[in-house]
Image (cartoon, helix red, strand yellow):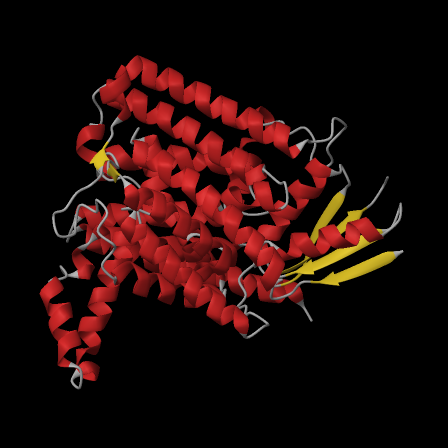
Length: 397
Length: 75
């Protein structure tokens, strides 16, 4: 089989996809600049997620499951760079985190949401962003996870302080700088993240000797700028730390430009509402269900920039994998995988709705916006995935 | 000796778990060839083996979206 010829086909398709996407994005700019930004930033984030194989789920799960903290350390770097960046942007008046940061109540919904999210990511094999990334790469199983996420995120969440529900609010927003002041907040952040990094490294118990990675060696950046730029797009995957840095950088540009932090789940639940409304003729025999959907009064999904952001992550990831000849439609081998995928996705969507955000919205954006709910969510995801991981290793492997 | 692990169709964390089991079994200077179609493996298997054991790895894409990761147990 002539592999190079096929790679060229994928490469051509990648370029075509990017061109068509850009045309569509610029066309939609005329309609709404927020949709345009959602498209562009989603694309870039999806692209670099795939280029660096950046997987939040691995960061939560693998440290305890296989004592591998590579992604966990990269997540810590992501949070560190991003929070310091947001801090600087806020202090200099470029952004106002109180206005556009990811601030959500922390309450029972955050604890339970985190646990369920942790369980869900074990079953689904990914988190919400990872699912979108892998959909773009061709994983059929992740498309099933996405259906689960659509269903789970659409159901009304258990009302523990969820701001969008009936108005009951047991939790409250805890914006850390309100309690510690900005100087102490940033110091505490740096100390805690550094401490977590150190703990991860200790727990991993890395060997003291030389660490050998393929193709590693000194990279002379100054002498080879075009080579370095090219390596961002094609070739070997970007290492996790650089990926973390790139994603943080994208977020730091995105928030001032777009006015929103990274988030996915409310775009997806909007999509679910839209799909149900389109398929309403199918439910003619079940009027109660139709009434319920109509009562929810879902706003038009396709005016929500977050939906465009989410869809563009898929397209960005697809472009990246096509560009490198890595695209392949992959089907899970074992039939039970589809059940795990659907139920895992359901848990991910349901818990993200409950906790007012997924690994992007609540964890990444929440922590970077100095909101306590992000930390609590993250902690309970780790606990949930630890418990879920143990069950997985015992019964499902 | 070369050992082949076929993990096509599996996603994280299965390829690493299969690899871990095999690493314990094989002897010094044996090579394990992990065949996977999971893109994450090209990063996380490499990092895992490099950090935990310091074994050299070599990654080759043998077909669209299918990789062979060769791990040499050099201790």
